[in-house]
Image (tube, rainbow, N blue to C red; front, side, top):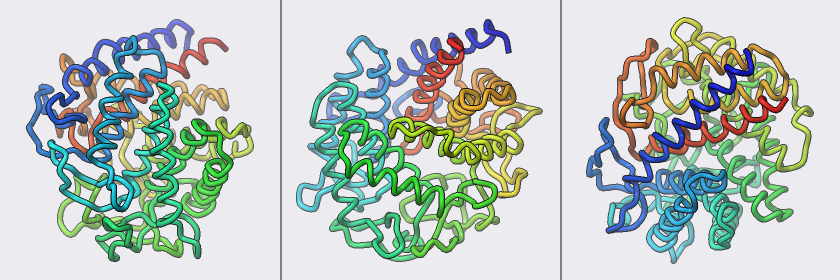
Length: 422
């Protein structure tokens, strides 16, 4: 690919970020009446009126504003919007009696679901640490540290390693099965790595470094497939592979109905998660001042598996998932997987210099910009057919927010700039 082509892709990404994506959110997300962020928007970007504010959506919005400010966007306005989000988190969502954040509030800040779900707490650590890194305000670091300490106290599995994930309000473990109390997941442990990375970057504390190294070790030796290096979604507490089921409090299952179990419950791997894990691990190692080349074989295997199985060479974009050994079982195109693969492919090219990664980036980039962006509105459609026809058209809800899309543009621009400097 010629330098001019790479520069054109970089400039297209920045135009989209600054004139479409960020303005979509900054012009409509602030709830000036109740605090926090409004996150539910229809295909035209209009507020749907949904009466909920989830921990995941609130913290992801906080991360987005903080990271964009830290990256130099917004002329300072994004920092003030981020502070608005921090105030709602601490004053409304924090459980003053038991510690931790409630899972779901209504718009006014009343508790709707009082469980303590570690998936959401991982994003609280991530976003609050990023807020301090971006603004210098120590309150983010303070509450990120509190959440980290609670997770170590209540969630650590001292027998088998890793973390339990689903708790009631008082930090008692939820029941098994759909309650999630008997499960450990790739999703949570990967996002804890992401969170602990930013927390350690923020604090420099040895305990945060040590726990980051521990969760990396678990991901590498328990959670990814020993041969294909693909992510295995769910485990029992003792790390035996578990059939992938739907939890009472769900994420990533809104496309599935019925009894809450996929057809291929023990042999499926998500291309978006695999790619996201790879680039997040590279970033974690850089923060730890460890050469990512130490795990070069792992990264090469993940990137090649993604390119060889996940990229649609006919219609463009990234498939949802397939068996660990290769192939595709779900050919639709989800927004967040496109976003994470964009960043990962550029990370792979920077590590190995293999042009297939840059060519694959071009494939996904064009699919996103030609098919996935809701032109005239600014955000991405959540779900498309293989050919690129919208299936779902909402622009925001508790599970579809700005975290993946804005982050992908920021991270892609940074990596494209590095490629242009080579």
